[in-house]
Structure formats: structure tokens, C-alpha cells
Amino acid sequence: MASKRILKELKDLQKDPSTLYTAGPVGEDLFHWQATITGPSDSPYSGGIFILTIHFPPDYPFKPSKVVFRTKVFHPNVNSNGIICFHICHDVLKEQWSPALTISKVLVSICSLLKDPNPDDPMVPEIAHMYKTDRAKYESTARSWTQKYAMG
Image (cartoon, rainbow, N blue to C red; front, side):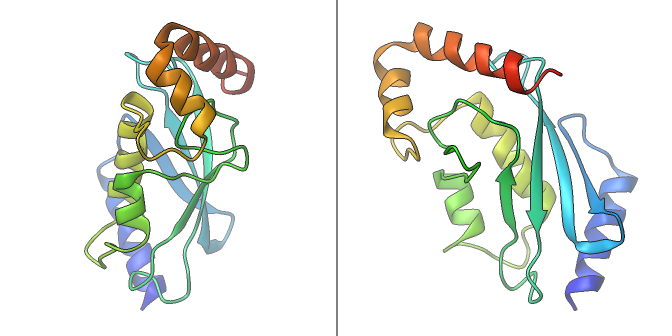
């Protein structure tokens, strides 16, 4: 069941590629993917290419995939291990997961999160505080990290 569904999602991605992200299997392992997300142009992540890993469980799509940033990113909803915590993905990847959701929808949610962080549901409270109280410093630091880790 899982293999069939993952193959269908892969075919859909190949048939209708996104300008925001790419995703596909690492080698022959259908359950282990790599994705890249392009930093939104109207954000401090602009110009960055962010690498993520996706692991599908054997009972996918009844259980959610695990998506983790491999590129370091300065963001209130992503910790130093690349773990993502935000309302949309929290719902999408945990409690509100539905087999109708696809990896494409998850990646679009992550793209949206880069553009519009959720400082009220932070993974890193210090960054969320900076985002709320000193937006210029937050954007400058996020831009600096993007240049250092996601542009080369």
C-alpha cells in the first residue's frame, strides 16, 4: 500500500513540478527522499536552497512522513536539529494528519512557513522573541545564515 501511494505521489510531482521545491527518492529507496526548497523571494531566505530529508513510514499514508531540514536555518519554528514545529505542519504531520494529504502539500506548508513564521508556536523561543521584538535583527540574522548555509 505505502509503496503504491509513494509512487503515485512521485509521478504526480514529476508530471506537475513545482517552482518552489523539488523532491524525490534517494537512490532506489522509495521510503527515503530528499527535497529542496527555494527560499521565498520576499523573505530573508531569498536566494537560499534548503535541503530536507523525508522519511515515509511503512504504514504511509495512514501515518505521516517525517520531514527534517538538513540545511541550517535561522527560524523560530525550526530547531538546530532541523526539526520543524509549526501549527500547519504540526496539524499536517501529527494530530490532523489525513491520508488525503500529500508530501506536496506538506512542502508547500513549509514554503509558507519560511515566508510567514509562526512566533506564537515556536520551536526556538529566543528566535521567536527576536522576531516579535526586533524584526530587523531577525531578518538580518536569517539573511546571514541563508548566505552562509544555503547558498553554496
